[in-house]
Image 1 (cartoon, rainbow, N blue to C red):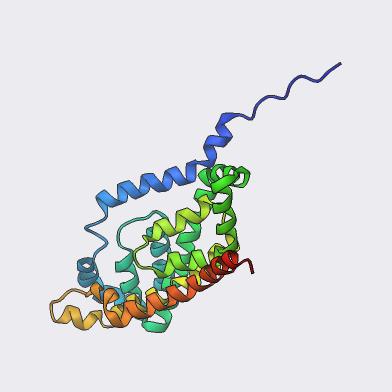
Image 2: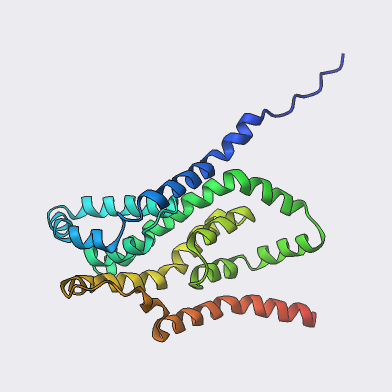
Length: 246
């Protein structure tokens, strides 16, 4: 007696895999419409005295709340990531503020990565693994230069943060590699935004707004591009060796 043909996998579990990413997209749209006016430097200006008082009375509680809020901003691609980074410097100073900013942004990025990999990432990664021809060469190139590409995505300021979180999940980047390159690659930018936050109190006292254009100043963008070029060097060397047959 032969066994009946196995039933196809139910569609519902497959759809459930896409639920986390769909939820992120939904919250991102709602947040973009409703929260833009609330997560702002004006809000920080109006509440700075209360925040400083809370920091002085319960440092750990404020630090934990800050990390939770920043993780939510990054994980759901809400507006205000730059404001959060500046706030970290304002409340906690350059060293602790940078550490909290990097930790929060990394955890939020990991949340997006895992949500994307559980859904679309599984499908696209499997297709990429099974592909040949140009797609196969692209797959092999990405795998060989995984670390360099991930660091470039973090170091080049023109790449939106959420794009640098989604793309690695969709092409099957290893989780551990994604996590440590994210934490390492965002440190230079975090230092810049945190340092702006350290002096934001005096800016508010003068009635001004934090100048985020500092990121594009030659003394800032130059070293960032230098680090990006250093990250791209292994890619260039592998391409040169491949052409020379070395």
